[in-house]
Length: 141
Image: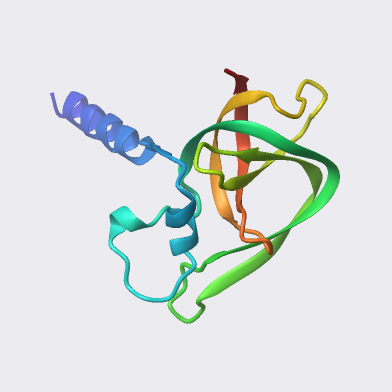
């Protein structure tokens, strides 16, 4: 009986740790993640969050470096900056006209003006103040 109870507790803990809730991408909430000051949890989308985005491909770039800034987890550091390796980018415009940069491996199947749905990980903001999304799964709509 103890073994079953321990196993159930372990499974429950593992499932709780793996819960990766997906939220709708929101440009303002992503920018709020970098601003100093107090924001309510529902006013911020933090780095590492899985986001869902619907929009139209506006631009495709090959072999671009991506410079990203995100809030730091350390109390002594406000922001962290890093550069992703050269990769392909798709710029997506959502219904509100906000632009997001999606970092992907292959761009062969995508063309400008394709309507797509993207699910990926919000990494941070680039120098142009565009949210960067990696580990993306993209589908045509």
